[in-house]
Image 1 (spheres, rainbow, N blue to C red):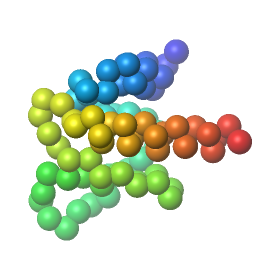
Image 2 (cartoon, helix red, strand yellow):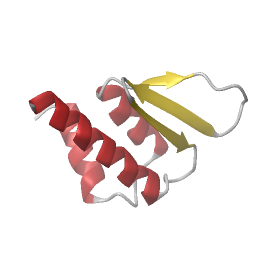
Image 3 (cartoon, one colour):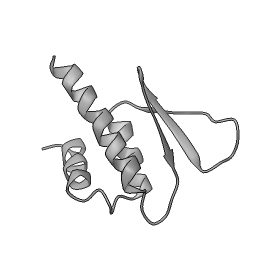
Image 4 (tube, helix red, strand yellow):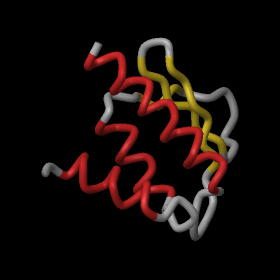
Length: 83
């Protein structure tokens, strides 16, 4: 099992305790790139093909709603890869 799978499994097991850095690393593992924003706000936009997600920087943990949304998008990407 690679780092990508381990990180994904750890995040799935406890979506309430995910650090911003862990979520960003997971998105980068799946090929997402950070899109430049116009302002210096706390939200970052990540895109990969037709998929896009906005993640606000928050310490110590990202809100669960953003983690679950990210997991749904990653599930769609994996479905598309296996189809």
